Each structure stands twice: as C-alpha cells, then as structure tokens.
Image (cartoon, rainbow, N blue to C red; front, side, top):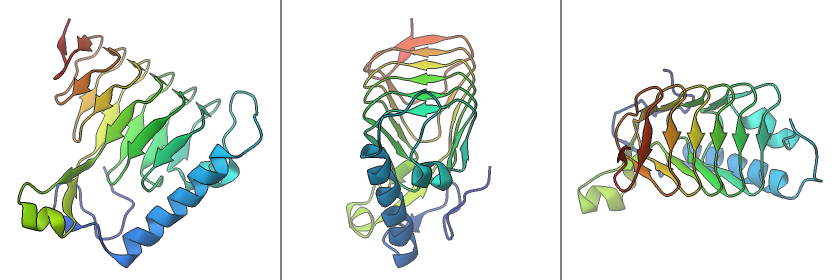
Amino acid sequence: MKNALPGVENGAWYSCLTDALEGRRARARDACHAHRVMEPRGRGACAPPLAALLGRFGEDCFVEAPFHCSYGVNLHLGDQVYFNAGCVVLDSAPVRVGDRSMIGPGAHIYCADHHRDPVKRGQGIERALPVRIGADVWIGGRAVILPGVTVGDGAIIAAGAVVSRDVAPGARVAGVPARPI
C-alpha cells in the first residue's frame, strides 16, 4: 500500500516536523474547517475541499461534521461509507474503509505511532502504519483503531473499544484492549 506523503514510508521512522508535512496538515485543516461550516446537505455530501483532498470519496458517502483528518490524501472511502460526527482519522499512512461501513460518533483511527524513546518522541519521530477496515463493518462510538490494524469484512467493534490487534471477518470485539465476544 503506497503512502501519498513525501518522505513517509510505511513502518519506517521519520520526523513529522518537516515544512512539507506541516503544509499538508494545514491544507487538511482548511478542508476540514470548510466541511464543518458548509450548509447542511443530503446523503452523499461533503464539502468540495474535503472531497478533493481525500484519496477516494466513494459514491453515496457521508461524513458528518465535525470531522478531522491529518492529511486526507491517505484516506480512501468505499461506496456508502458513513462517518458520524466527531470522528478523527490520523492518516499518516493509508486508511482504507470498505463499502457500506459505518463509523460511530467520536471514533478515532490512528496510523501515527510515536517513538518510545522520549528524546526522539520530542523530536517528532514517528512511524506510519496503515489501517484497513473491510466492507460492512460497524465501529461503535468512541472506539479507537490503533496503527497497523486490519478489521475484516462484517466485523463489529463495540462502542468504546480500543482495537490493538487485527479483527477477523465477522467477529465482534469489545473492551480495552478489544477482545472477541
């Protein structure tokens, strides 16, 4: 899976404090702001700057405001994907969301994994690990998907779960850390 950010290779350590990456984050903040203040529209709506920023905005998707993404260019939404209000996607690596998946209010998806060494962490050293969410997935409100996780087709993530490991297709997980139920 190719990363659309210059100088960021999936899994390799890099500095997130470069001018080039800050420029990309500023563009994403502007697009998210435009989305937050747009006129209410029907299903399939997204502020044009946000839709243009995303790697893919599938047919009949809906992203409720407010919404935040770090870069946008690495976020690929299949058809009929729904993001409820208050979602955050830290897309320093590719994030792919399959068709008909529903993301609950306040859910977070993280690709950025900060360095364990406090000195390097203070220097902005992190790595980017992709997240894959299959088709027909339901992620409950306030759930968190951590870097490098794959969620299989038809899986259900309970509200408030913290998902640190892959979730099998059709599985249901809950808790902190998330476990099969």
